[in-house]
Amino acid sequence: MRLTLLAIACFGALAAACASAPPGPAPAPERTLEQQAFDVLRSRCWGCHGEPGKQAFGETGPVDWILDYDKLIDYRLVVPGKPGKSRLVYITDVEGKMPRAFDENGIPSLADSLSDEEQQILIDWVKAGAPRWPKEQP
Image (cartoon, rainbow, N blue to C red; front, side, top):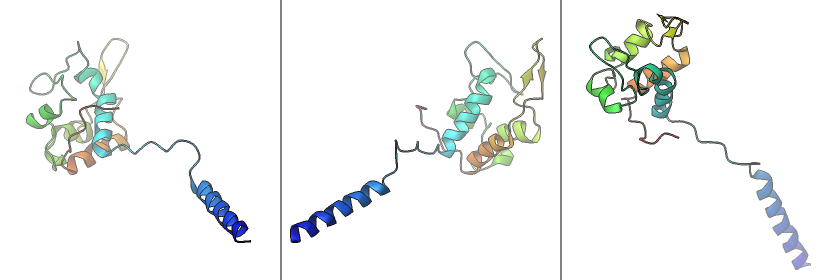
């Protein structure tokens, strides 16, 4: 009788453990704020301001290094903790100048601005002190 009760208890514990385990693979971890900021810059800015062979100019000179964290800080495109002082936020949000779409003749327009969510990611990242993104991005 004791053996039967022990077997039933073990089976019940095993069944409960299996029922609480999630099916399939574990969900992917959420992207950190700095990874999300990198993603926005990579997908929306790098094509003109980083892709090899292209050189788009900023107000004072070439900006062909948009994913170079140190240059973003050194050239004050990003002022950690101060979105109001960061040229990146000003140009994309306040002026709405970037990114630009190009027509079939290569003429830039202002029709392709960042989405509200993309803009908020950049603002939140700067407000949070512009934490450095990992060197290797998945």
